[in-house]
Length: 122
Image 1 (cartoon, helix red, strand yellow):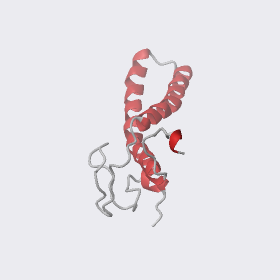
Image 2 (cartoon, helix red, strand yellow):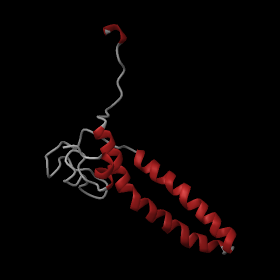
Image 3 (cartoon, rainbow, N blue to C red):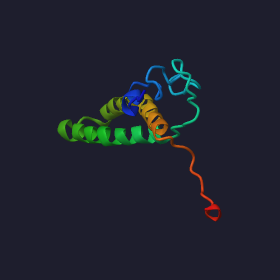
Image 4 (cartoon, helix red, strand yellow):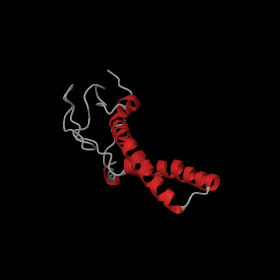
């Protein structure tokens, strides 16, 4: 059964069957899928999801803060009260699905560790 990596990732489901959950905790992957028994330890998303989520936060939140500053001219303490919680919530909301999505894409494309090919055996 072909499962879309995009839908499985964004739903935080198993990239093999699309049914079982991939997370044991907030960001910890399970070792096996509850539905199909697939080994979920063969891929690792690493630090990529955190980078992409923080970069997206930079793209969306900084221009919003700048617009807010130039449109309303609030005192500095207002920015301190508003933007850190918004940034924190943004990152927490998107980190889990982005991590599952990158994991599902690795699964789909059978990504593994890079290896150097020995040219003397060709």
